[in-house]
Length: 535
Image 1 (cartoon, rainbow, N blue to C red):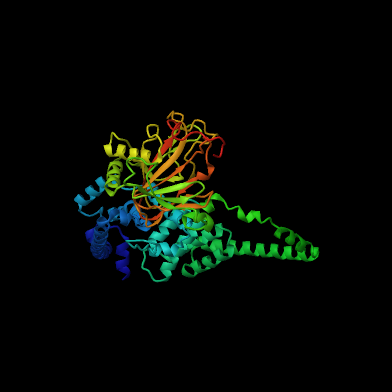
Image 2: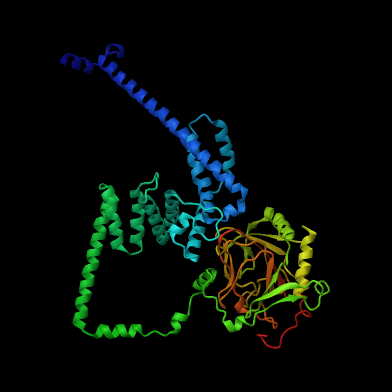
């Protein structure tokens, strides 16, 4: 009534103010509703935590049965980084308001050991590197259909989106497009996700635009606006893309008219452009050759040269240790001469080396060509450790074995280096020896240049991980218990530039190697100097 309305407009004590009391009733009703929502949210929260715990319980049970094999799958490695860096943090936020103090305090303590954003970005970059090197499409990686996998793993929409976002933050629009397109595909296929298509399309259209494909960017923008007609950025982009396409069309029409006026002049010019030297196509960049060899393509070994490679029982010039029990030796390549020794290191020795090395593994370094100082580099992604006879007498036994088989002095060689290449681990093309423009490369050692390299393979690799020589088109594949050997210098002391080599990224598996870099000093009588530079 009008009287009631007048009373409600007058400031009276709450108990005597009917209007305020009525408001309080509605307030209380709202509180009850929000309380029920809170209860539902708590129940939902607990259900989410339970589902998460069940999923992780099953996953960790499988993973801990074969940790190295499980982490040998690149998707598993990426998802572990993502889970620990992002998803466990989300779970913490979810449970933080709860009374689970024990869990939160434990999580807080454990967090200091969790990977960082940098680690997660590194794992993402490793996946992208593998994708490029081995020419894998996003769907192959997402579905986990990689060669030699033990633990197949599927990437969710969120995983694909996260990978695309990391590429976007690195201004890598090519990979942003690939992974946002994959996220969209999985959403289109009906996969449940907390992400919506609008968010994915926003990134996708922009990444395509940045690569100069305005027409395709426009198509995705239109699709975005069908889902969200009020999306302000998309509305602005739509006008901009249409304007740019119209501008391009006018420019193309003007060019066509100009060509018509010029007559056959342009035709003549086109013919001139087509006249290219055949040599141009044969000059493949080193990076491309490296990636081709990693995939097993482009190996340059003719049948005639192949017929001159042999396998034999080798006694190392009648060394007493090998006269009655010669080792198995096979030729891997002729120029440079690369030889492989089979069954040259036992399983017990390999396991002991790994056991000694694991606590000491640090990010592998390279020798700075200018300063000679050891430092990390983006093109060498592995962890390494150094072992001597002081660590275990077995190391002296292995060093002696290398000396007996190569005939070279080990006293001036570097310590045995152990390297572990995880998923995406690689060492891009490099020389083991110091070039003339690096006079101080090994000055601190005082043992001269690296005359030769001995490389043990201490694990099989399910896919990837070859040692390749891009200049000569050679590829040597890891084989557990074997070792390869080659000379980095000619007998004259000049560097053999054909020994430039690289460690391909590990696609699936875990690669363990150990190497011995042998130096010039002490080899004067063991490998006399040649009479010509290339001898």
